[in-house]
Length: 248
Ligand SMILES: Nc1ncnc2c1ncn2[C@@H]1O[C@H](COP(=O)(O)OP(=O)(O)OP(=O)(O)O)[C@@H](O)[C@H]1O
Ligand SMILES: [Mg+2]
Image (cartoon, rainbow, N blue to C red):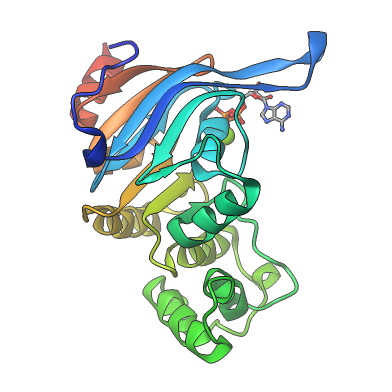
């Protein structure tokens, strides 16, 4: 199904993307990373984006999250329309409403785990004591109780990824954006994280969008979107539908 037409009222969508293009660089060296992308994610769902390396998945996540500007088109995230917003408004929108889990974990190496996880709360005006208490709770949910005072560099890749997930969820964001959230995790921890993310998604005021190459986690998706060469080419109404097609 190319360029799917909206089947839902706009109010039922968490993310609405129409005709979005993004070019990096200029002239002959420019790369057209997003080509007139149409995409939508519903409230209360976990949507997975798949597609070959370089097809534009991280770029799409970044424009939806407001960390990267786009050239043309329209993006709404819950009730916020990103096109036409000033940079300051986008920053405000992002810090309240978006949680990220990046392909690289982007932890701050010089501060300990509880301080890392507190950052989204501190920038939203929480007191340090309240923020750290909440961060500690999140770390415990990720199986990292007792490690709060350690530095990120003392942790394994999988542990760092769990810290990054704690930081992404600590301020209860409406939109959670995950770029390969299970790449560094063993099967059991990956399953635990996906169940947690699915639980987070199951709320009409939330949505989780996950980019993944990890076929072990497809089964957690409510729907799947397939990207190719800078565009969303197909949308599948279940992970089973996608896997059936992929097996052909
Ligand atoms: N900051 C940038 N400057 C220039 N080109 C970029 C930049 N970021 C991405 N690109 C290019 O845009 C295209 C899409 O990149 P993107 O990172 O979105 O791919 P991806 O689908 O996430 O790939 P992967 O699965 O390898 O992470 C690629 O050709 C990439 O080289
Ligand atoms: Mg990527």
